Image 1: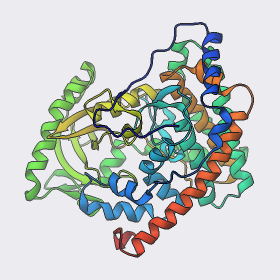
Image 2 (image 1 turned 90 degrees about the vertical axis):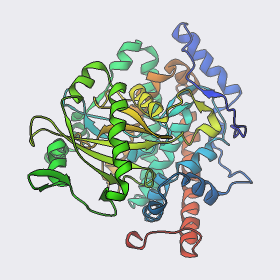
Image 3 (image 1 turned 30 degrees about the horizontal axis):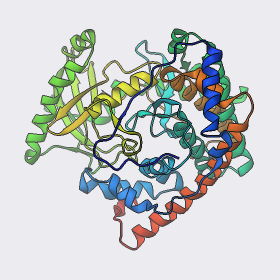
Length: 466
C-alpha cells in the first residue's frame, strides 16, 4: 500500500531510467511486480479509517485567492462530475492507500476524461491529447488509469447513461490502453515519441449520418484562435485594445493592484529566458498591451491566473498569454518532492514529456515566492461535451482517451514493463472496472457531504453560482 510521507524532507519523485535489456526481459520485470501488487488487488477500494474528505479539500484551498474560493465551491457543487474534477486532492490521498505496482511513469496527476481535448500543433493541425498538467509528477502508472477509469463512470452517470453502457465505455478504455501498451512495448522509442492522434479520428469515430455535424464541430474549434479571443475579450478604448472588465470571472487590475501588474510584466523577462532561443526571438517581437485576472476551470479556481494581451505588427496580430500559478503537486505528500524546485518548470516539463506536441509559447516565471507557468490562452482548443454525450459515442471517446494515455505513459516510462504487468488477458481491466464503480459511489457520497457542508455553513459558496 502507498503511504503518506509525513516528514518535511521528502524523497525526490523522479522517473527511473528504462532498463537496457531486450523487450521480453523487461516484460518479465513487469510480470514480477504482480507478486508485490497482484492485478486483482487493484479492485479494492475501502476508505482509510482516518479519511477526512472535507479537511483534504480545505487544505487544497490554502494559498488560493480567498475571495475566489466560494466560486470554486459553487462550481464543484453543481454535479458529482464537477465535484470529481475539483477534488484531485481527495483522490491523491485515496490512491496513496491503494496497492502500488511500483512501475513509474510521468503522471498527468489529474487524469479525468475532461482533461483530454483538442488543440493546435505548431504546424497548425488539430491534435487530440491530454491538456492539463498542474499536478504532474512521476508515480505509479495505475494512479492515472484509476482516476481516468472512475471519471468515465462519474461522467456517464452525470450524462444519464446507464450502468451497462458506462461499463462498456470503461471496458473499451481499459482494453485500448492495454493493447496500445503492448504495441508501444515493441515500437522504437522514436516511433513512440512521434506517435500522435490527429483530429480526423473524430470524423472516423462518428457514424456516417453524423459526419457533417462532426466536421462542423471541428471547424468551430479551428476558428477558436487568437483572433477569436481578440474579438471576444477586448474592446477599443481610444484606439487601443483593452481586455474587457467582466467581474468576477475577468477583472482588470485597478490602481490598488498596480504593483501586482508590474510584477506580472516583470515576470515575462524570466519567462522569455525559459523559452527556446528561436521562440524567444519570436516573442520579443510582440509588445505588452494589457493585463487582467481570469478565473479558470473548476479545480483551478482560486489560484492566481492572469491573461495578458500582446500585439505584433498591428491589431491584426494579437497574442494572448495566460499566466497561471503553479503550486507543488497534490501528489507530492505521497510520492515525494518534485525534482524541480520551480513548480512552473515541473508543470511544463511534465507537459512536454507527455504531450505529442506542445504550445510554442509554453514557459515559466516567478513573482516573489509564487511560481507560474505561461501558455497561449486560445489556440484552437476544444473538448467533447460530456454533459450530453450519447452512450455509443462515450465508448469510442473513452477508447481514444485510453490510447492517448497509453502513449503518454509509454513516452515517459517503460512500456514493456507496463505491458508485462498488464498481461494479455483482461484481469487488470476487470479489477479496474470494480474499482471505478466503487470509487464513483464514494465520489457520490463525498459530493453529498460537500453540499451538506455548504448548506450548514461549514463551507462558503458564491450565491450567484449556486
